[in-house]
Length: 171
Image (tube, rainbow, N blue to C red):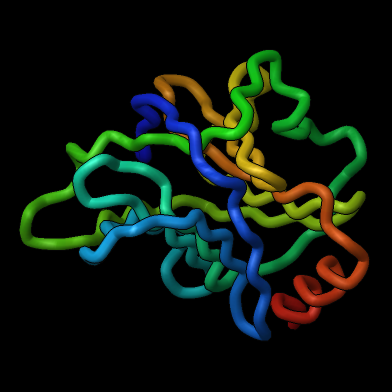
């Protein structure tokens, strides 16, 4: 699991949409290659999170593929409704899972993506928790039991952004 060991002030994440992927990036002066934590089933779904190789600071989140894009139900918990919301920060992750031999840590999880009500929600692992979230701009990251990152949502999304995401991941 991707363990949150703290947070750090950072400029807001920037959303980038192209015809293939959804990416959120955070500015950095890093000249080295990031480390990556990846999840999904690695056939029909893949999410990749880039982290700083020394500090564990969040650098990027990329939704590469999703088996299906579902409709978000109005009653689903949103991370911006968390009891504790840390704003204008990004997570710092524990780097203990990475070996010196590989810049990747792969953990297979069911990856779920739902869109609607001006937001995209992506989660894996545990059910969404209402206790703790970290916000950077339009990106809200949910933190579950044992300080593991369990999902995120992008909010608010424009109608054009919602349409672009639907077009990317429709069958």
